[in-house]
Image (tube, rainbow, N blue to C red):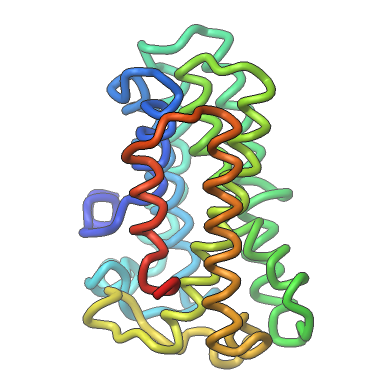
Length: 257
């Protein structure tokens, strides 16, 4: 669990929790437990995605994948343990009321389950090879990436105590950011290198990708479009300009250039 969770990484999702909370007027420290929980879930999903029965990856975050170092059995147990530990962290957070903790535990379970990450991975494994439509691929990207981005933004907003209109704006913001981030990831899988990315490239060469469906320039345009939409939705929740907007632009910088 420690090997995968503490390995070098961008920490985009936990940072999104903290920066959204700060953007909406809260102290980012009050969102730290939730940020750690999101990273536990994300790391667990990576461990499972990398398994031989899934993507059969050799490299993750610049290191050998967990199952290659410790065995597939240990990898599965580590992933399950990390996901369960996330629930422990959220449900016992000292900075949230019992009502907010219950709400976020429910949202966390939904995002992980059969209408979230699990559904996205299943469709990725069994549908992507035959997809010929970019919009269908974006549906899978929403489940695999956007759902956890949305949860991260919701958590930050919950800590800040935002109203329902702001929650909806944060959800739309996170959905658009997730699409931009996944489009960037598809592009980097084609033009990046393992030493820079810390993971295998050409992992999706036998699957449909946005690059195959739209071309490299088309994907760059999609990244810019989704990023601009994300920034616009963010203004619907708060007009303050700061580190969250800068973080968004830096996260997709390569694909926009």
